[in-house]
Amino acid sequence: MVTIKDVARVAGVSSSTASRALHDNSMISEATKRRVRRAMKELDYSPNYSAQNLVNRTTNTIGIILPVRESQDSLENNPFFMQIIQGISSVCSENDYMVSLATGRTDDELQKNIQTLIRSGNITKLIFLYSRKADPVFEFVKQEKKVSCVVVGRSYEDAPQKMVRFVDNNNDQAGKNATTFMLAKGYNHLVFAYTDMDELVQTERYQGYCEALQEYGKKGSTLQLSRLSDEENAVKLQTFLAENPKTEAFVACDEHHGDSFATFI
Image 1 (cartoon, rainbow, N blue to C red):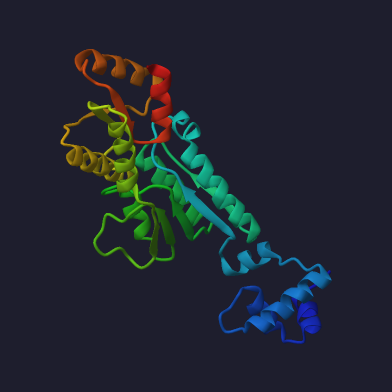
Image 2: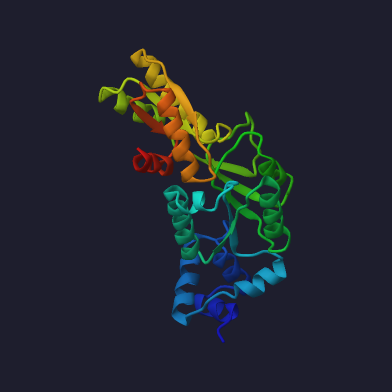
């Protein structure tokens, strides 16, 4: 069986240098890293990550944290989550990492599942697919000193901790663009449909909605939806339309609920 010592011999470096190059250590020059990679390819060498993880008490696994949902269908039918999980999985696979998902129907259940990932699975790298105000789950993770996180969304803190990084798009502009598009089409009575304003993505899109209405001199209103079932939302929608007959169009908080509206109406 080919070992790291064989790779080092072919690359003309020491075993420790070959090992550091394998782990992309910044102390090793790019030229040396290329020599080591060529030697690995020539010898068809594959690192034994299981053995390394056992020694280091780590794992080549990244935890993906999904938001709390009362209904599993609301996750499975949301294209955003499916697309971003596919993207994360693809990049992890290219870098010899695996992914493990954590979700729950309540904050306590989700926190317990994350705790299992960290303490039983030795997972120290997490990606949160949401950002939520005063999130007890995220607050729990921040207390785990060995854990680092990337959050898809914006920080609700003025000075976020260094162990947390944020990746976001301009949700304010997205909400404004969607609303402006409808106003330009001649729809004057627009309603913003949302589920949870504690989720920053929804808050920001609502802010964009309000900005567009203000620029056009229009007033808006809101409709809060449930995550429990599309059937319940269909009833809510029909009741809302009966009570607000001047409603002409909706700006939905996300693609899933927008598609649902197209079915209900």
